[in-house]
Image (cartoon, rainbow, N blue to C red):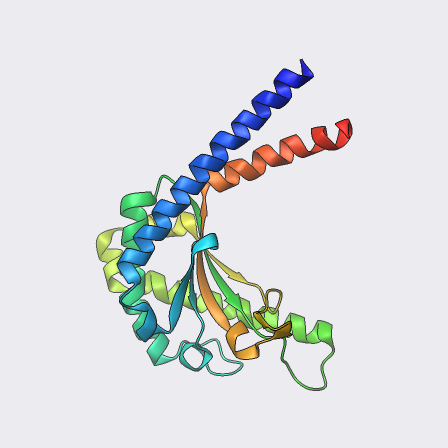
Length: 208
């Protein structure tokens, strides 16, 4: 009985992994096709493994210690958001669990601050920045005209992560690269896989 249960669990996980990989590849290819001609001028990139579009040019995004979008970044969002939301809603809305707007900072803060104070200060700043991005995005005229606001309210979240996920080069933090805004897609298949693994893990531990 235990062997059959284990085999069935393994089969379920294998099927979901395959579905997840196929789904995420399809979304990645759609994003790449839609935005490949714009990424260089936006100084952005697509992270295939996480379905993330990363805007990583701090001189374009925000002034230092400010949560007000720079005009250049606002213009980028005017171009990016309607196409991004239209693509996700039209082709993939049944597959998407969440779209996360994530704000990331470097670990830098005032020179007299402790590491904890710097982290908390940057957390507040990153949260305010992602809220500004979300608020601006939802106010774009085309979004309202296309009727996407209800879906955005249910699906898009703003998440400030402070300096928790720095970009490192040769084992050292790249402060400029760490200051970024990312749009990350979480699929329902990935969430289902996590739930199954959570259920399996205690049983596996107990058996071991």
